[in-house]
Image 1 (spheres, rainbow, N blue to C red):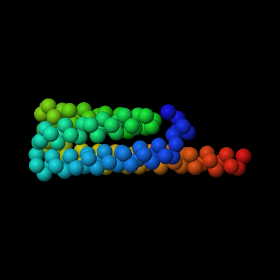
Image 2 (image 1 turned 60 degrees about the horizontal axis):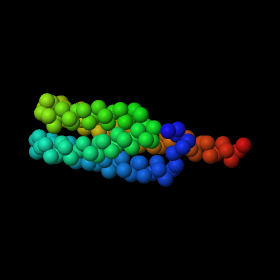
Image 3 (image 1 turned 90 degrees about the vertical axis):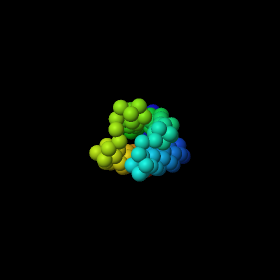
Length: 125
């Protein structure tokens, strides 16, 4: 999808939805860090991650979509207990969640900036 085909309303809906999914990710990580492995907590984050991945793909945010896909893979390994929850993993997951949040905010801001620029130029022409 071209950045020029995304309406500001759709962009706003994506951003609000993404923020909710990122809050769920934070809550999951905090719960796992505080209480240890809990299969229901891990499985509970898979839906929000899957939705964020799909929505990001539909918006044309390919890098975000690919990162969320890798994050799903990590949580799948945690769910299968093939990857243990240790302080190093939590550091990387919290850092990754922050980077993901920043990427979502920057991607939506960049699309809005491009739309504003195009609108300004159209008025000037």
